[in-house]
Image 1 (cartoon, rainbow, N blue to C red):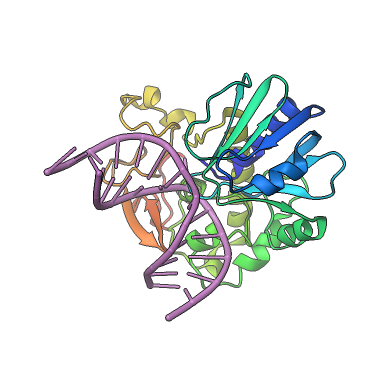
Image 2 (cartoon, rainbow, N blue to C red; image 1 turned 90 degrees about the vertical axis):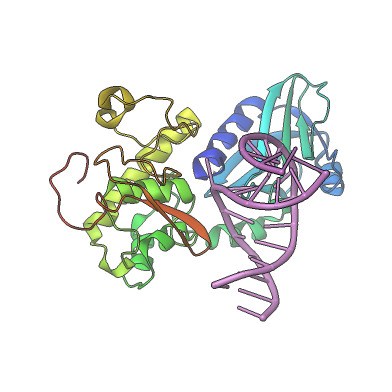
Length: 279
DNA sequence: GCTGTATGCAGAT
DNA sequence: TCTGCCTACAGCG
């Protein structure tokens, strides 16, 4: 489930598991073999994330491993070192006691420090980084005729938000997805940003996306908690055709800029409403 | 066994 | 707006 929270969580887990340890690197699949040989046998000094990008640093080499999971990549950390290789493992990282297997990444490469800087420079503020400046995103949003739903997915506007957080934050603020960026009031954007900080921080802690407020949880609403389980509790993401948790209207879906977009036409009508849960 | 789909993004058209 | 790509898995015949 690679949105920004996944990468930040992986950075924490990699640091905790491998930080300060001598590591071995291989590429069972072969496509990272040359690079793996260069970093093999080094102490892992740290891991960090920015948006959906993961960086791993090793002692004695300036270059940094850059990983982007894309749509379906995964990095699985597990105890033990004698695992059989299952599937296409691009990079296997091991300490004396632990193994991390990277499968299906969009990108796994070594970058020089200037290349890392260039990559960071093209990212918008990341709600999971304490130094992030939401006004930088605002400057891109408030003059734009592009729908807010599209802007939220643009990593140069906000880094780390993916299709789930986009749908959920728009729902939680009652914003119609097709609203032009320039029609989003500044206070609304700030509330959405603060909410993203909260939601994504919870995402890192739980390693899953939960966006449903306590008063709308299945137990509180008398719903079956197993009715639509996507590995997290959400309002609209992939719930098209199902009743909205808040108002009961049917959740809609359309393709926007090549991605599925989900929303509730009633809760996100753009008209002031008295229902619970919206600001 | 095949097809479709996926929480992403770059490059071509 | 589209195509391609990284890979695994569910659903279907």
